[in-house]
Image 1 (cartoon, one colour):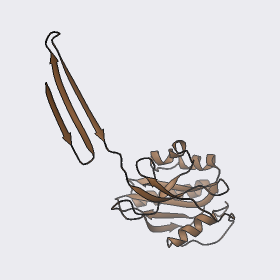
Image 2 (cartoon, one colour):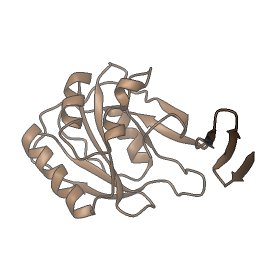
Image 3 (cartoon, one colour):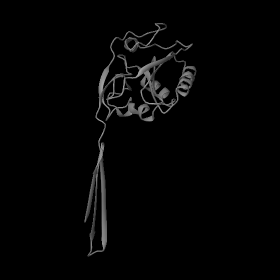
Image 4 (cartoon, one colour):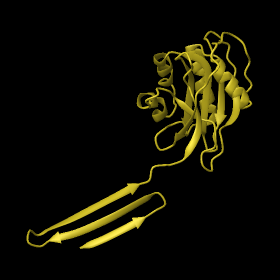
Length: 200
């Protein structure tokens, strides 16, 4: 019989090999256990008090120019107002927020038209609370997302979220109070574990 075990920073594994001479067979058994991430971070929800949704996008492995190009195309195709882009402290990772509000079905349709992270797009199906979540605080040793730029739009047709606007202003995001706004004042801030939520 042969037994081996290994332990890494985020996994444990073991290997067992044994033979049964009377049936002339040898059996190998290998297993590995991986530790789920266990970091609690602060995030905010895309859902408004009135059950509408602002647009959150989470981009990974895309150059900034490609993200900006896509967001401008989305603005034109869906007649969206300004986008606000945040840079993460990981190469080619960005968040984008548009304050226009939509029904869940409409927001999901727009999400699926993006190059956003697939797990993030479809997380709405898996979260019991039915919301998209973006991180605004630190994540372990990683810094909070940093506001990068505003993509101005010629469109100002949809009702926008007042609560989300006020929150982003506290993060030093320049938001102009033009167009139509809802009367919601409360925004859900969430402490979530990276083992079971998305929103990098």
